[in-house]
Image (cartoon, rainbow, N blue to C red; front, top):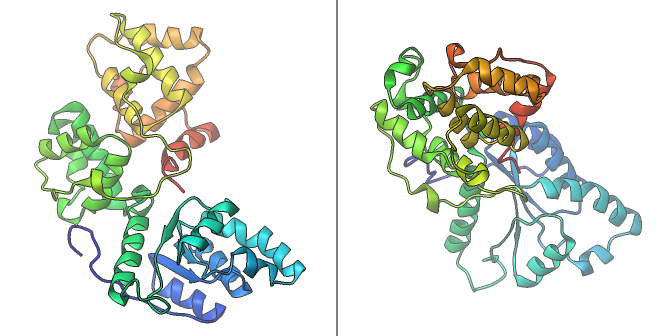
Length: 339
């Protein structure tokens, strides 16, 4: 690997469901590539991938084109529409072999993440090497999507430390936590890509400098990735609620309302930065939250801030609350980039 970018891949092939499951599990596959889309084996493969939480790419090989569907018995066609559609919708990408297949698949509306790679076996418009390179680029694009989900525990811990250092601008705020992080073991590619997608690179780049870490120089803005259908890159809080108007409590209340309405890591970090300011009146803020009937919701937010950006207890205006609704807030952050 070069800065986290794979230069080669180990390919394992299976042609029956038992072998497929064993190899996918034992090889700890990064991606499962399913060829075909109209047999029970394909359905089982997709179920296996979902069970093992492995990302999938599907090449239907024309089996979802109208003429191919019409050749199936009516019962099988109906069953495939119900079952296969669900799994194909969850695939990270669908590879079609030509413009006609791409067009007909897009008309189905099953998955918007459609790529086109010609088949070197059936056409001379592409060489085997070019076909392999284009397919491999799709694999890399899949692995560069929702990288938070793929991070190891050490990289996740490092991310929190880097974020806190970037917010505070001083390594002394994370001295103890930083001792538990070996910067040489950080999965930098995934961390930096995640920061770019969440629009927090300014903070993470600053935190990395503050901590004297050495990270690779990656132009992460140019790295291709897949995003959820309704994904919008997080915006700075000032673009959402306006500027500070001289009343810190009012400003914090506006930030809290916005974060509760549409939680993003960026806005949570901006809220945390405000909570550390000297002019914050905790009693006044707590009273304002109570008057607005937001105390419990804000307490859940404080709990998540303590976990995600290491908000210190002494800067919490109210006591944190950890309950089932807090899990909802956690999952909103966790699944923000989930396909």
